[in-house]
Image (cartoon, rainbow, N blue to C red; front, side, top):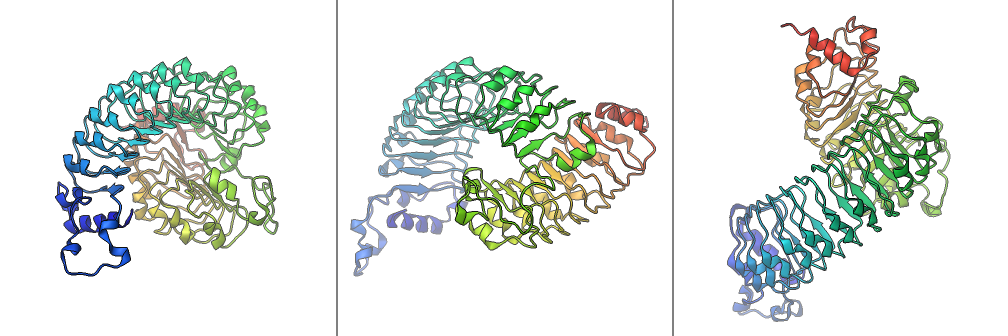
Length: 573
């Protein structure tokens, strides 16, 4: 903000609009009215000559309780950014159409049911954020916003997309997630600049063949739909990430894979895939492969011929050709580095300098931080993480942290500095005995790997991790099932094998309606409560290696569905 903008911020704060439903009138007139200071007999220095100040260009009114915006917003014609997200707006003033210099408009997290047609008169608008509202339709003429580069309409109630979208040829990012779309218009293929398309959590059964002509597309999100097969994308030569988990995909077509030669991330968890074709090796650039919770019983040997593969998730599959104890060590949760005792340099060696790492920065892979959002300092046998590792992050957002295979006795205190972006933390194979309060502040965390430590309990403060859906606590010292896990509604995978847990609460487990994998192998369970059979969402229940007598080994060998059915049959009527 320029100086005048800072003045606005100060005055808005003093009015206490966080307790008000409207804006003070003088805010809208700030370009017109003489400041109060000028009405006093004061001498002005060079920096305080209000008559020489420029008009307001940025106005941020986010996270208040505004119920309306005045038509007087037109008195701020120089605005390039207007941010009113997280308020209680039910409509927008038509005067917005007169802000011809506006480049970014953020009206997300409100209660809007429609957008004014006048919004289509903004020739310079580059970013329009309207996610988390109550929109059931978009203006048919939205394609008139020819300068638009970013459009987020996620988390609304949209059932259709205007055909005029085809005119948005400069659009780079389009987010349609969490709506009620049953189909995508084929005209989307005209968006030749589009790099990121997010269609997560809709009702899509197919993807238009024309979508394959979007040559600039780099990231495609199709999770939580009703797809039965991967889309054919022969012209998407730049596609790097394809996320199609939680669909109904049964077959991986080898021909489809051959079209995805640039793919780095392939996420297909929670489908019905029965086999992985040997042609998977055509994906020579693949770094992350998530096949968790499918129906895969064997893997092709060619999977070992993927030279760039760093992340592999296989839990929740009835694999028979790989020993389960081997999977316990090598199989990882999504976005967790695949490591083995022989990987990487020894504790006293420097990591190799590659084309991805500048020689002067070989201890910290700056390239991985900037491009993969990965902060890695693993297999160093270090007692603490060097300050230089965190200093190297700078202003880069970090999504994945890997500090596994060290000698850490506590959670690194500076980990909390990454709370705005980190979603995946691996601290396995250390000597950590307790969880700090700082870790509980990582509220965007989705994956937490704490295997092979010396933990005996988890703090109740972890209840704040509402987005956590995978936690690996294998090979620790738990004698009691951590009660806080019952209060994490997003949990999909609980890996608690090789501890000393003596009992579980099936009623509270049933409350975790997203739980798909529960691994309690090699614990001290003396009995399996029959009520556990009511947890019908479980796709993988692993109980081998416990001292209970029933269910017998023959029942366990039949798989999760048979075990759950057996347990339900033993519930007292």
